[in-house]
Length: 265
Image 1 (cartoon, rainbow, N blue to C red):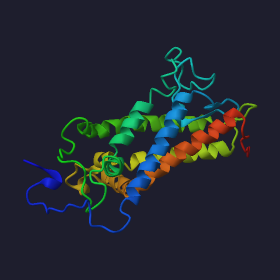
Image 2: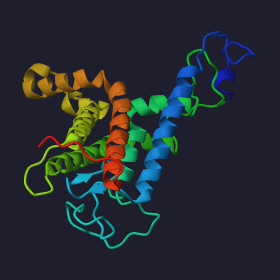
Image 3: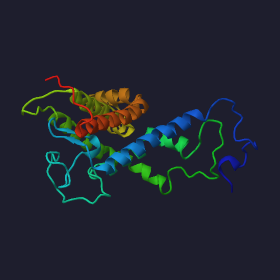
Image 4: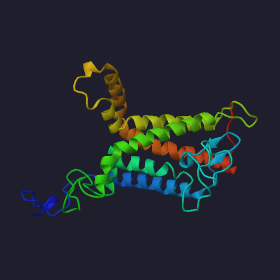
């Protein structure tokens, strides 16, 4: 039995769509935005250069945690657990796979790349190119169901990024120091926490299984807080892509000597 747009009872329309507006613009911009981030992040993650500013203890989030002897001196905040890494393994290999899994299985990102890349469907009232639809019941899309487990690891990584941001309040002479890099690192961490906690899985964990909110006032309060963030999940998903690139780019420019960090204290 045929399925999708050829299923019995579906209108037989030869055109892909009867829409006359620029319906293709939104999925195109989404594809370009996601592709730009993926290309930049991939190049930087495998570059292995200019990710640590020793004077101010700035560490790029793409390289955290750095836990091998290949890491720049001082950047191994949690120790060197592994020896030298070959060039095809990024410095931040310990966290990057889980963060990638968290983003790929995120409910918003699913919607974004299902429509723009997978074209399932590209837009409302636009026929998708797939003859059959199995949803997330078969490989590889069935792996989307492990999103909540990636959420737990993403929470741990956010704690690590928070520690990195705190350690960065350092001056070359020792002791407390404060510069523009600290503002960028701290802003990135705040946005990462907002994106992580606005996750649909976090909202469900906070109060999704409760039948009587009145019997669980603390969890109800947590659920309301997460729900307020959840309505901004799409905006936070895009914003954090921008803050990650901005933070890494700033650290790279300072570490390479292209610019000097603006110091306040």
